[in-house]
Amino acid sequence: MKPILIIIFFFIGIINLAAQQLSGIVNAYAFFQTRFKGNIFVDDNGNQGPGSDTIRFIYLEQKSLVMPKINTVAYKGKLYSASLFEVPKREIKIGNRLINGKSVMLKATAGNRLWKIELSPPAEVQTCAKGYQNKILINGEKNGSPFIWTINYDTELRAEVTY
Image (cartoon, rainbow, N blue to C red; front, side, top):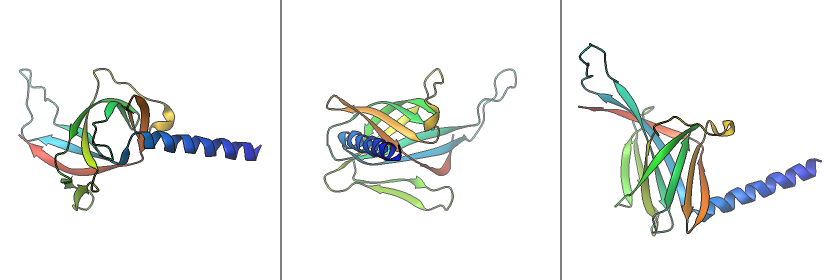
């Protein structure tokens, strides 16, 4: 029984690797940042508006120069809509880590391209399967073939105050 289970898990791993390679993605990095508003608005009844929100975004490094199609992103159990933008430079400063203040820089390997995925929550909150509550899953297509790319962790950046 154990050899059969080992073989099954081996094939699942191979299929997962093949699906990730279909995407052309070399690396993916997830970030989030709390955004504080300088002045919190108050409505006519004296009720405070939202004081802060969390921005979530992902950077992809891809071998292909063709823009990938990103359908949805499941970010720690919640489904988000994705907007994809080309990063015009090979090297970019993302921000500073919250835990130690160190600068976060990304640099694409020669011949690769960086893409930024900005996430926005859908009108209705949707969740994904329970086994993926702590992962980030990018669901997309390349050349008509679907792929899923998994990111295991995200990095919190220092907050920016906006006015």
